[in-house]
Amino acid sequence: MFPWGSKYLLAASGASWLAAMAYGLVTGGGLVGVLSFGYKGGVGEHFGYAILMFLMVSTFMLAMVLFFTRDGDAEAMAALVGAESAPQVSPATGPAYWGPIAAFGAAAMMLGLAVSIIFFYLGLATFFVILILWTVETWADRVTADTDVNRVIRNRTLGPIEVPMIATIGIAAVVIAMSRMFLATSHTGAVVIGSIFTVLIFGGAVALSRTDVSRKTWTAVMAIGAVLVLGGGVVGAAMGEREIHHSEHHGDDHGEDHSEDEGE
Image (cartoon, rainbow, N blue to C red; front, side, top):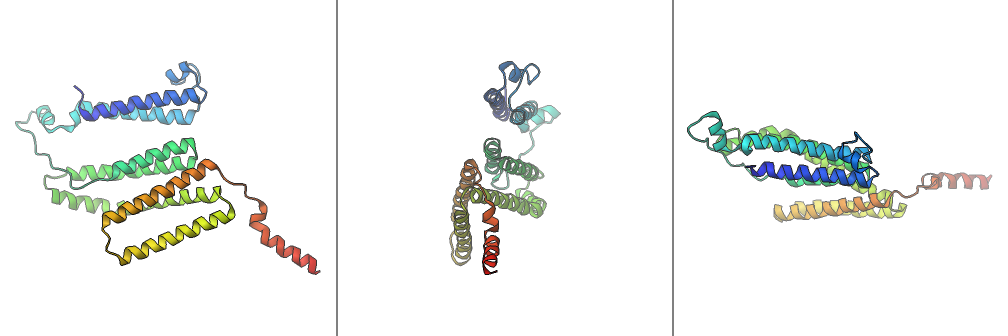
């Protein structure tokens, strides 16, 4: 019988395979080509097809690891090594937010394939950071049977790298989203959007320092704001970049030269 973890990963592997087949057919590949991994016929757009097939293979391999280790079940491991009783399993030291952040990375990668490649790179960087942080936290939760000691080990290990990595991803996401909005709107619209965004940041910082609102409330407000900014970036990327005329950059210089010529 398959344990639950391997079932989920097998389902993800199957979904990735179907997505690769559909993507290959939609982008111009042939049925025989996408079924034979390009051995007989075309697979359509190579990059997206390769990414989805890599996801299929990696999730299938993880599913097999969980199947043979029985999801790390204590009783199964005790029977495997011949122990008389199963070791005590310590609970997790605290909530982990890596799942939602990983979902953001997956969504960014899918948007990158459909809208703008810069979102794909953002999602790839997010997955790289989550891979490191989630792995270390999972190890720290099981390093001893004492949850307090595990929490200290986790904070000492992740503390120096967790905040800089998450902050870098967050700043990059905001900058990318804002740049897409700036490039999609007119020169005046970009100035207006930038001004509103600056006022909101400054106002939020002042309110945060002078009010006693709970941390959960501020987290919810920041999450909503992040969704709005990223949504605006996606819309801006879908609209495409506006035509930037040479006069937008050198209009003032031309005006000054023209006035000098008239004076002469």
